[in-house]
Image (cartoon, rainbow, N blue to C red; front, side):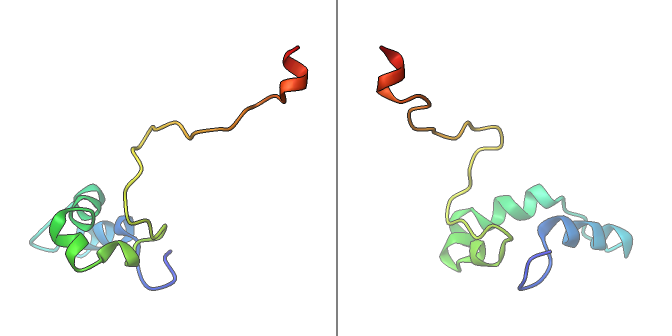
Length: 73
């Protein structure tokens, strides 16, 4: 759970549980938070990871050199 409130997964689940007339998925909440409108009001600050840009779901992280140059000789 986010320190400032609920995560998008919790919000979507609660809406489903309470049978709210509007049902959205957590992915829709994330998409809006990172859209131009969401960026304008800085909604990303309220998300659990607080990133200004969203990292692709299965993106590989960049790693530096795994082995020192001395070992490659």
